[in-house]
Length: 275
Image (tube, rainbow, N blue to C red; front, side, top):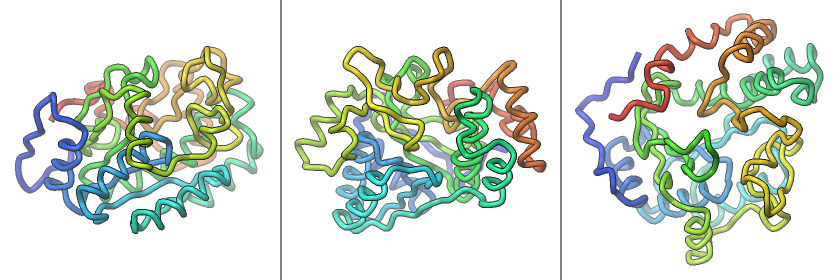
């Protein structure tokens, strides 16, 4: 069901700046709002903005899939020290990971797109679902310019995939250049893999550096030539991939419902319904 709030929520105007969107979210949702980040450039901009707006009194969480790079772990420590913010680290269910790895091996993501999506589901999506069950709003660093699949994202929407939690994307309209201008202007700490040619950063074995002619997300699961470069946190698989995915996930996590019944609002709110 769509999460019901104690009072009606009036979103900010459609032309609201990133800082206005964040200030609105912090004011309206308070402790029921959290920033979700993998510590990419956009996430660091949002953390810096939120720290300035709230004096460091904002909730931040990240998902440690068990396959993160050492550079990511180092940056988490830098963020804690720089901003005085406690970073909540969410882990996948150990039993689910063990069942998946025992059945399919530790690097199953190389075998097929369906297996890769299942790995993301167990290590990322399911931990996120458990965390969002305790929130009314979450803030993410999605930008429309990151990929074709993200070109229509809303600044503020009801997240149909996660039972109507309000989803705030303050940087939806920002360009790559605007993100890095902010980082340089405010001396924001950033992920060291960017200096090695990475343009999108995820789990260590699933991310590589890119060349200047490649799409920003080309380094994610680069062995998949025709697959959508998404892990499932924001978009779900469909068609035959969905059916294959559901069968394998049920083998590893028997209690998991089929994709459509887990996201009953997904068809109606394909791009997220406006509040």
